[in-house]
Structure formats: structure tokens, C-alpha cells
Image 1 (cartoon, rainbow, N blue to C red):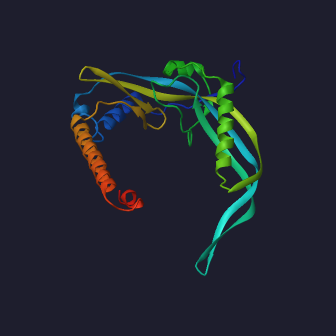
Image 2: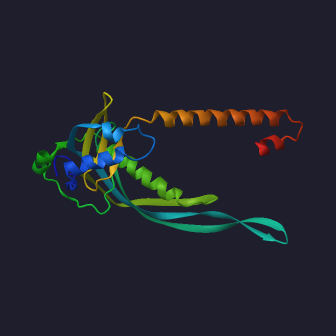
Amino acid sequence: KGESRKIKYFVPRKIKKEEAIAKTFGWLSSGFKKAKGLKEKAVISESFLVFIPYWRIRADVVGWIFGQEKRTSTSNGRTTTYYVDVEQKIQKSYDRTYSACDVSELGVKKINLTGDTIIPVDFETLQREGMMFNIIASEKEAFDYAKNSFSAEARNSVSLYNVTFEHLDLVREAIDIIYYPLWVVRYNFENRTYQVIIDGEDGSVCYGKAPGNNLYRAVMGILGTGIGMFLITLFGIFVLLDASDNFPFVAY
């Protein structure tokens, strides 16, 4: 548990180094927005495994919201608006992850634990396999942010015209630390270094950087400029027309 008394877990690595590199080359060859010949000319400079700590925060939001619901009815071509008193029961479960360290360079702010094997942490095993990041994010700030987010999300799931009473409680609150495996694969292309982050559990590409296709950029820039100029010119013509106030805007 450690000094914070929070139980620490980890997700075992399933993807090997060679598989992570293969996934990287597969990503480099996909799509037309990337530079031409990227897969053939890219050279892997290094690849290593890291275990990133994430706060896993769980809670149930339960409660009631009373208010009025706006409704309409049409009879003989006439529409009438009326309000109905309703009560909405809230009962929602939340299970979210938040990074417990600086992941700006990795670009993986949260992880999906659905179907993953989660076991108590074995620091010796993790340190032998890869690099472990330290926990630097505040537990209290993460917990408070998550609880406020859960309550707001549950509240927003109910759409009422007028709320007269509401009461929400958070129950079964829990917070743990999950160390998650990520492969960092760095490659060189035309004297510049880029990196791709591969999920060490399922092999998906979590985040990646690659040089862009100059032809694609040029075509999109020309098309965007052309469409913008056309719309501006068209709008100017409608404004100059001797028409009703609404016509130019509706036509535009």
C-alpha cells in the first residue's frame, strides 16, 4: 500500500518489443496525411517500456431531481405548451482514470481498463521490465476533480425545464493507483526525431507524431482559401441586393 495507504496495482505487459515496433511501422504507413515514403525511410532509434501511474477513481452517484418538463400538444392546428411535474431518479456508476504524473510528452492522459488483468503491484518485476514513473499529482485534487465531474455529469443527464429540488450523493467511493505499460518507440526521419506510444496491453497506438505530407497541406490550404473567398464574396453580393432583411442571411 505504501505511505498513502492507497492500494497499488499494475496491468501486465502483453505486447513484446518487436510487436510494438511492428505496430509503429503499421501506423507510419497508414493514412495519406503523413509524409511520402515515411515507412521506408524511417529508422528506429530506440524503444523502451515505461509504467505510468494513473489514479483510478470509482464512485456511484445516487439521488433525486424534482422539477418540471416542458411539453407541447397540437389540436386543430393550434400548438399548446404546458408543464408537467416530474421526478427523476439518478443512479449511475463511474470508473475513470487520471494521470498521476506529467504525461505531456506521451500524450496519454487516461487509459481504458476494460477487460484488462489488474493485479497487486510487484515493484521488482516492473523495475526489471521497464522504467517506472513517480507519482507527482495530488491525490486530493484528482479525487475532488473526479467527484465534481461525476456529480455534474449525472446532473446533466437529466434535462428539465425547471428544477425545484435536487439531492445527489456519492457512495462506494474508491481511489487506487494503476501502473500501466506503454511502449515508447522513437524513430528518425530526415534528421528529425519523432515518437509513437504503443499500448503495452493491447498493442493499439495511443499517440504518435509524424511529418506531414506537403502536397496534402498545399491542396487543403488552396481549397480552404478558395472556399473562404467564395463565401465572403457571395455574402457581399447578397448584402448589396435590394431585398428583405432576412433574405441575404437565409440565402447565405
